[in-house]
Image 1 (spheres, rainbow, N blue to C red):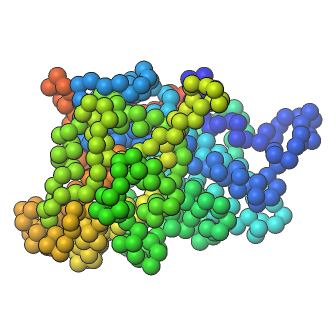
Image 2: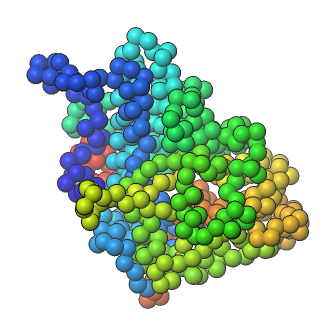
Image 3: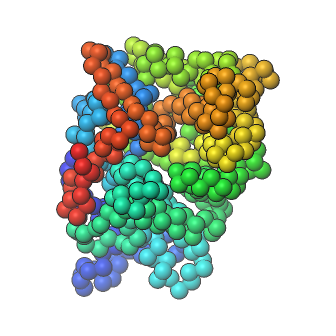
Length: 489
């Protein structure tokens, strides 16, 4: 994404809109591509209803997963600028792939596709034929807004959400080059997300997709609902939707096989497999323009040997060794083989092109943790422990029953007699290791107001405290033209 391209976008990508005021010159469509008059054409549009920029680099680099390796080169000035700005908690100057600004526009680009689809469906004489397309548009619109509000606004807190500024919830196609929007509140955004999600979810039809895992299937939407209600702390609904996200509640057969199949193949084989549609654990995948792989393997601010030793060696509470495969490409850059770049040349003979990364947006592992946390808060500790033991059976080297999680082990490890508190700490620790390179640690940091301290190679420390306003990524300055105020600093 070039600087020129971004500067030409004021708020929502105008190119997705179907111009309604072009005059008599275009009263007759030049061809049928401009008319969304069949379910198939609407489905083609909805292929663009998912953010095409990777959010993981910006949130992951801001977490406590990242250290200063003292040297590194991610391959371009923009990538290195972005990497440094995020590590030092600065509003980044970078606007290309993997940046907050690029992600903001990618989400509203996806929302614009959803709104065009819904507008076309509303004008169709045979709306029942579009039930599946309408459902996908509603759920995808909810998802893009959900990500925007959790990245660019304060994290949901029931006591303040009705006054905390949110992000514009856009529900109609953009017809004006510059239109004025209001941010609303976090509460109003969450209300709209819930409305769209619940309206669309029952009518999703997995059979309407050629490759279901690139779209919101029912399982993916249930996983989305489990995360949404976890963030809202509506724990009964986390369980309700989590149980429906995994076929037959069979977590064991659908978790990634880290201590079996993955342990018998090489790093270069795991990475491409990790984000494939054939992997049972993946519930929703998204193709993104991204150079995250290069950042992981070469940037100065990345996963260090110290982070590896903390997160990927000893298993908290029960002992044993994590089965996560690790390696390094450049100097001491530690990687877990999850990220794979697909480089697409601009032409057959070109030496230049664009990098793409397939990102798992929802997984079976996340659903398991969502449910375990909900069970913990509902006082159903046995159910939470049972889920976590299923998880551990796929993650510990040479797993056997001696590694089973128990109440006694939890209380002893964390020095507590409060099993709910101990379970939540256990879950957060396991999530921390599981989702390295995947960005979900950032949202746990927001949910639990965990401070982040980054230590530079010089010894200086940079702290993101529990209430630091920089926990809200900055809204692009160009959005001010549409009346959207930036976050305070």
